[in-house]
Length: 162
Ligand code: CA
Image (cartoon, rainbow, N blue to C red; front, top):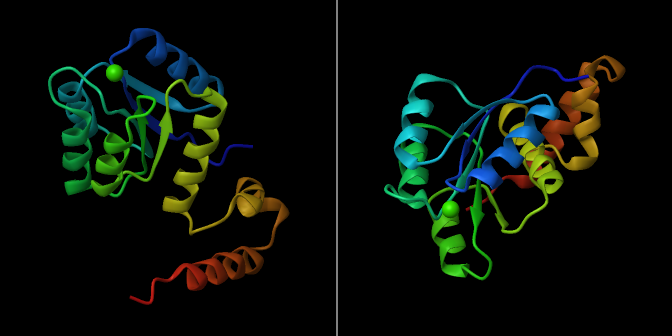
């Protein structure tokens, strides 16, 4: 079913959250690297190619915002932030730094997987909606021209005229 194994970097200092997310993503077929601080996150990011990053903002040492900024300096990889409940300023700061999406703790791992899948497809294929995701996951069931047409239409619609 899966087109290819996607590599995800998880950056989370809370061991329990980290291992739950890691286990969940691995069960979904992702290849996962899980680290507990920003320094190790950047080291990991330099040594492997990743298809997505799950980034807790509230980290010891190097703050998540800084990790986000440094990753954005070199990559357009989808970044999903994990933020504390009610920390609206954190979220705004993270989105301003180029994060693609965020989840407020406590979050559902299933929702994280869904968001991640969405973001990864948006980056690696073309801006497809959830409704078209199935077509990408099973390309053999859909002729290429149809996929291209779907992608093209969405791309044009999402073009920012500014
Ligand atoms: Ca944390």
